[in-house]
Amino acid sequence: ARLAGKRFRCLERMLCQTLLLAFLFCASFTMHILSCTLYDNWLPITMVIAYVAVPGPLCCYFRNRGDGMFDSGNKTVMHWGEFLCATITSFVVGMPFVMLNCGAIELNAALLGLSGFILATTTLMLSIFFSRMSDGWD
Image (tube, rainbow, N blue to C red):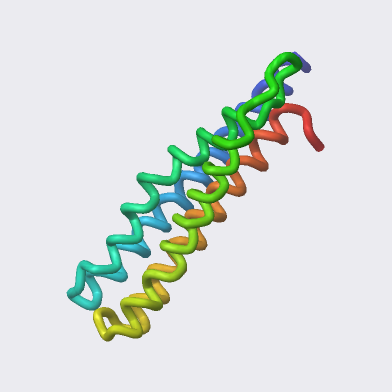
């Protein structure tokens, strides 16, 4: 009975974590879509295109770190992954300001797009935190 209660609490915690991550992810994309629809301008959606490109450099980085006992990793590919992640992040943060400066979008649309990016980043950080917590890292 005690083991079943412990498993239920673990399952309940995992469900709450998954629901929180899903809510933040949906709120992030809602902010991006609202930044386009409220101001009748679909240019801010270009920031979402960068979200599709981000997993590639991240995979290059994490795959070539060389954490294994016999794997030295490829530092060149890892550094390219770091560089591309930084480039994509600067694109996502800087693009709304460039479009705002050019007069292509309004200030509120840029701020909504950036708040969507902050929510997406928070979702990523929380998912890493929850993953490490489940692995026994306290």
